[in-house]
Amino acid sequence: VDRVEKRLKEMGSDVTLLGHSAGGWLARVYLGDKLDTEDKRRVKKLVTLGTPHLPADPESNAPDQTRGLLTYINREYPGAFHPEVEYVCVAGKHRKGAFPWDDPSKDPECPGTRWEKFFVGAGYWTVCGNLQVWGDSIVPVQSAILPDAHKDVVL
Image (cartoon, rainbow, N blue to C red; front, side, top):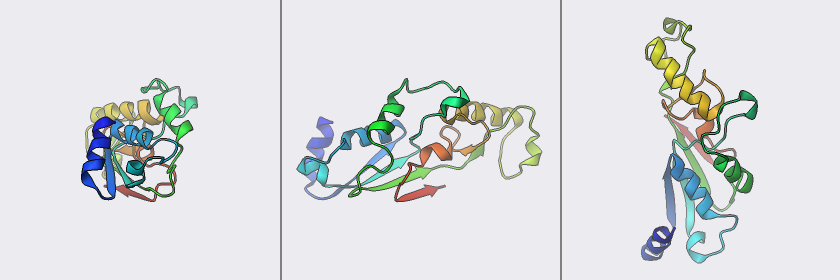
């Protein structure tokens, strides 16, 4: 945080924060519950890349990989929390997860062998509680899009 504050002072103009993966959570926490300093008020945009913003649905019985941190962040700073900051979420749509008994030839849009799709899907399940979703092979699209974001980009 000290390095971010120092860099904001050096820049002297409006800035865009960029966070990849858990860096998107850190940026949301950094902005805090109010933009109370002059430096923070200069943050005009937050762009997150492959950030899993949403915890898994508790009914899925998926393990909480963040040990409650993501639940806390979403409780304290839900969605696009600051109306004066533009939130942009970038998600990758590269591979869809699948069960090992699913026939890979029935989904020609999705590359990969039966086992590749299963292992990717198993990872998605730990993030969002669903195995059969699209994502970037790590983060499911539905988890990477922050509710109420001003823009979402799916590549």
